Image 1 (cartoon, rainbow, N blue to C red):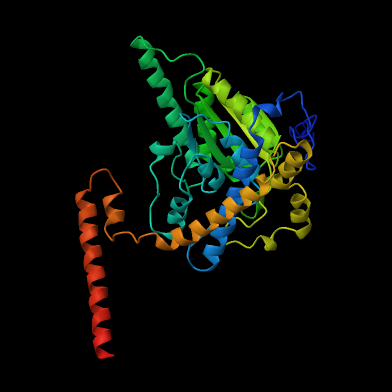
Image 2: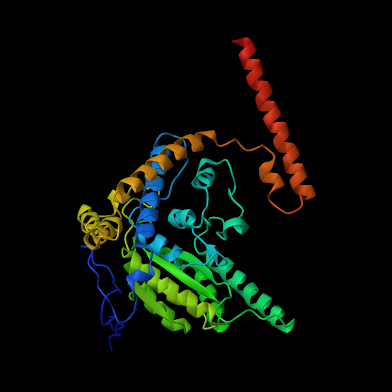
Length: 383
């Protein structure tokens, strides 16, 4: 007897803003655009794209070793970030440059990791934005562990007679790509989050390609429906619609703070550049696919809406472009000014306290560098 395939969703992803910039209310996700700072959303998307563009140029010039582009995913990142409170903690992958900007992270700090001058580059406690995670899916377990800590902290506060006011508790927002759904860590994180009703929101930017593997080889159902098997809600939104991404994340975070447990958000979008600057997407994707998604550009969409509704004051767009140009100039100068790390730093920052074995390795490393320096001096003398 042939196996039945799961039924398709009755309708597509939730969309509140059409590709032409028109409003598109959806009863599945009620939202009033007046509740969002539309100019700020536009500004942050433009700055995120300019950061991405300049970083790619720096990599091509040999200033960065690698860069993972966010081109096309600005709405998903900025929309989700604008739903956060200052006390919420974010766990990114390695592509959430737009979220980092919205959380107030110095964008030059992002470049250090890809230039090789730092092992992380920032203190997560300062902006509630965790370090980038290069191991696919690992950040989901980090996020769940942090959410478990929040629950236990709240229980201790309540036992001490100082409970948190309802709805004021911090929540966790963790980003993942569609490729992470095939990792064991992600599925383990879903199980723990569901069974313990943890205050965590899983935000999957389904850009349809796990490097060169299309989503269809990972699953035959949409990302959002995978939440059904773990017993918590899943919602699918147009990932190029910044309002839909904002509304879905705001609602999911509110549910998490209220003790209702996790939500899986699928932002259905498209990675318009290669996976990283070391990848050649032209080997596995058709040009027509890129052209189709170019017509759904998230920045163009919100620009059209702001223009049609008059929500942007005169000179606003020129001001944003000037700010983007200033950011580009700061990135270029800041990247080249990043200080080289001290040779001992990888050993000193591996653990909280340096172990005897690491001290031995550090001594060997120093001796190796000294020998190289001595060899260079000898070669120079002979020349």
